Length: 72
Image (cartoon, rainbow, N blue to C red; front, side):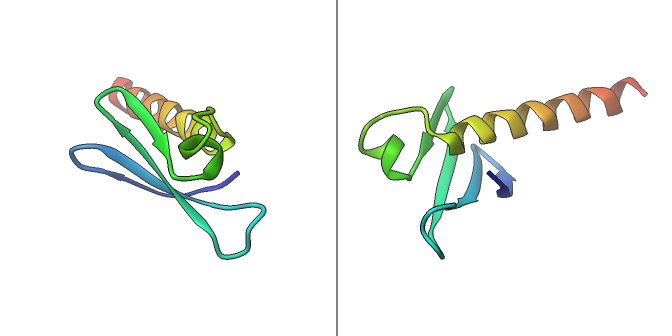
């Protein structure tokens, strides 16, 4: 799973490329404490999809990098 872009303004958004559908992309959002993804697994079934898991990991990594930078 590769997160292609992360944009932070009033909310945090990202775009993930589908691994099963050529040329398909899904939008990931974190807003008001809630994660959403436009992939079928999440948007139709409400499951925590692999895109959201990767998105959360990326956000945690970015947070740790900011904290490390602030402490040095």
